[in-house]
Figure 1 (cartoon, one colour):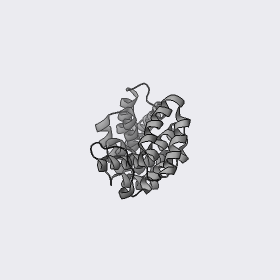
Figure 2 (cartoon, helix red, strand yellow):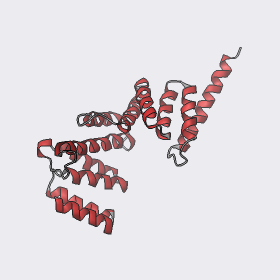
Figure 3 (cartoon, one colour):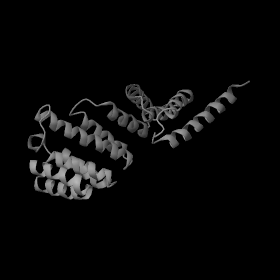
Figure 4 (tube, helix red, strand yellow):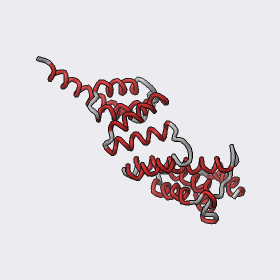
Length: 214
């Protein structure tokens, strides 16, 4: 497997993703328990928008029993590194199940799988918050997304928190989050959606103000 990984890096640099995908596919067929191979294959497939195939690769990682896993990597220790590979695969699955397959229940199962390997980081908690939002668990979503927006403070996490506030009818809080998100990074990928949500939020606030007038 070491030879495969060396060759993979050379092929990826010289010939690009397609050749690297073919090489990794051959590697995991030769050794089905090769965690690095399945994970890197899945990541390359995501880059090419081949999400169904990527999901299959990430699922293959989680099907390998820890005692039978073939892993290349020792830092900080072989078992910890192995668990990091499981964590990454399950994190990818949680996002793809939610974002691509629109399957929040399955995404939540992937999140639970992630947490078996190490405590969830802020990015995973952001995904979990979006899962709760999709499931209609708005208060749970607000709690998690509030936590991640404080920790990460990115326009994306602020936008996600704004969606939770909006779902709960908290227009002022939603507007505040959206204004902060839109004032940030110009390359913010959800800028158009956030701008639209801000208009909707401001309309709700104006309607609420009209109703409160004598």
